[in-house]
Image (cartoon, rainbow, N blue to C red):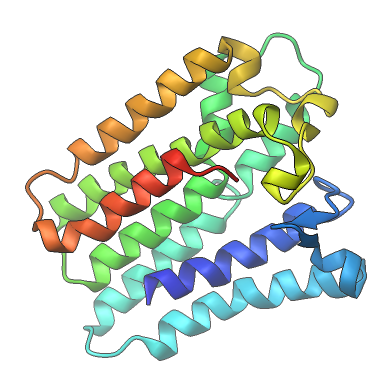
Length: 229
């Protein structure tokens, strides 16, 4: 269920992210974005509907789990997309465009409060609904934060090293918008080194878990680290 939940919430947030008032992107995975196909008003409503559906999905489709854990999971999901969660990163990102005094801590805050917030929610929900103890939940939360930050660092690198055709979306948009990125602050090579450290640190947090159960998370971390689009 958490994987399906991630797709629902991620697609909803990305529809909003692509809108003209946000990133104003015409392509997503090589295809026209939602607002280019269905118009801006329908895209806006579709994003809203999908985010709401995520809560319905958890509440209705979760079976064989104690009600208290389901309520806790719904709380985690709400926390991930509230003002201090998924919304905070884009807000600070927008307000940071053109600034020259942005440091690494500022940039990390932006990235941790973007896609990383959703990845954290999905991994933590899986731990909660799967019956994990508090210690395991928090260890997996940290793992998710690392791979979420990794996703954004890799995204920054790909934006300046790949073409629009390779990415399936418009390349170089961060540079044109004068947004702060890891390559902009520390260069491409240091960014790649940081990405590898995040991958390594995230995998270290999975040590001690059942290897078979941890395998999908290991694969996820590697997929994020080595993706090409």
